[in-house]
Length: 194
Image 1 (cartoon, rainbow, N blue to C red):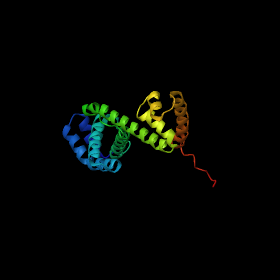
Image 2 (cartoon, rainbow, N blue to C red; image 1 turned 180 degrees about the horizontal axis):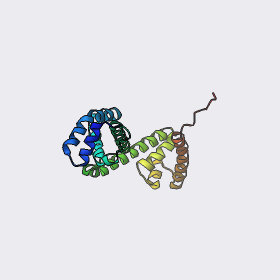
Image 3 (cartoon, rainbow, N blue to C red; image 1 turned 120 degrees about the vertical axis):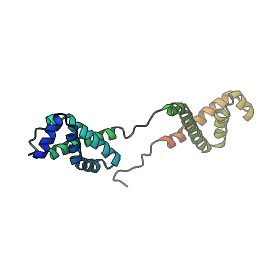
């Protein structure tokens, strides 16, 4: 099946003739590159795969039996090398390079995320507190945002500290109901029903 010309080149390469290997590469480089380019759709990747293919061909020439065309065999080697590259690229598709810059910035990023989360929580809680009656809203603001003690709050609103504690407890329960409405996943999808 293999042409006599290819057989002679293969035998010469096996005997150490580097010029014969160059001839073989020149004969099939367009075929290999075209297939690689069609599969990988990236010129530099196709060039690398073509080089890898010819290295594999050189290393495994003794495995070529000659029962098919040499072009068929080299196509198969090219195809499999492309598949390996595609798998490798998919495996590393979501990889991010980690270097000193990344490590140095992790703390800064973590702090920024923590601050964003705190800000979002504060905004959510403030929005929910605004939905409460004025007295409950004032108590929660003084206690959580102004961080005043029960005694300080009792002096401000002119009631006993124990009464402040009870009112604060009730205000937190009301706040919890409002927060729950905000935080619950929206289960408003009615499958097939209206």
